[in-house]
Image (cartoon, rainbow, N blue to C red; front, top):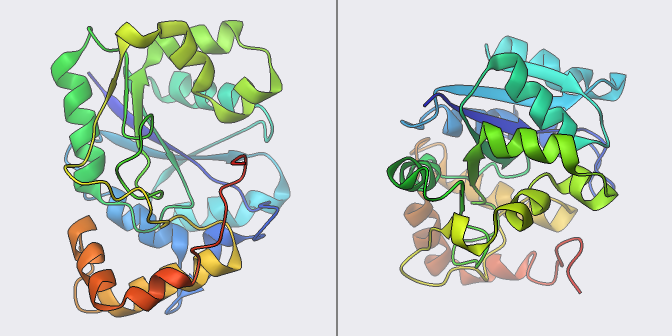
Length: 244
């Protein structure tokens, strides 16, 4: 199966505009994430999928400099954009990632992909997000092109069009989906970037880990947080959008 990672990216964040290109040590967050995703051993093609708005032109410019494939589609119909991206580049399986996870570990991505490949076609959707045990910021979902096409053809609610996978999960049902979990519950960690506090936290991690070890792992991040527990207070109070 050809496995394509599609990363949804945009500049128009409401809580932290332009977040994906905010810089740490002179390098945009999206570049850090691309560098890390390129280390995956299970992704056959990486595509950054953004909107047709001129606001998102800088994302395309960065990807061109980094020799990364891109696609442009609807800003609001993210499901449609995912399907069109996948159809254009012709993939069999899709890895859904978001561009606000600059600390994502390629080994975690590969673990979810490998589980999907090992258990296809029993499971048509596999993720590490249904019951969280990894930090928010390690989110990885894998599903087939066919279920993505079905969602594109049949989903119509604004929620389903914006969030891509809820329709797929409901359509497949519990017997067709699987969960990849970490051996310990680290779900209390927030490593995604959606607010100034999140950016401050991620900046601390990158400034301390990246210069000495650009390929630092999920476990390396946990270790440095054990040594610097005060860093966790930086964005502890941030609530994920949509959470009560």
